[in-house]
Image (cartoon, rainbow, N blue to C red; front, side):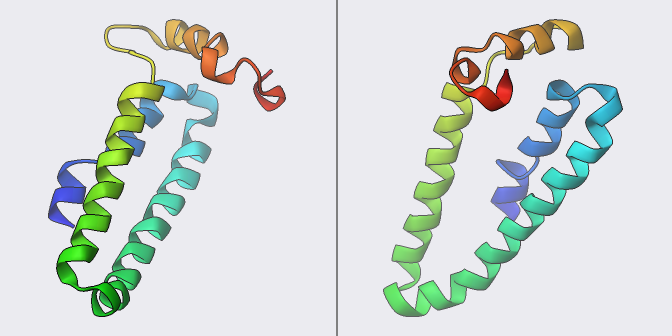
Length: 106
């Protein structure tokens, strides 16, 4: 949990301030916080069961691989927003290649 809190844990909150407009940010933070806490709870609940079934070391390798895959997805899928205003970020996301072919984002 310490490394999660230092690494991928705060990522959803950091992204909320950049990806959402101020009028819907509080709702988005509530939803993302709930999902993030549910995922953390599932990890904490599954660890003893998985550790008993496949062993502690294998369990840690599974969770480590999950964190590594998530980190790669963050790097590959998220656009760079450093030094950009909220309007520029919204325009980047509006025309972002990942979302172009999905009708829900149009």
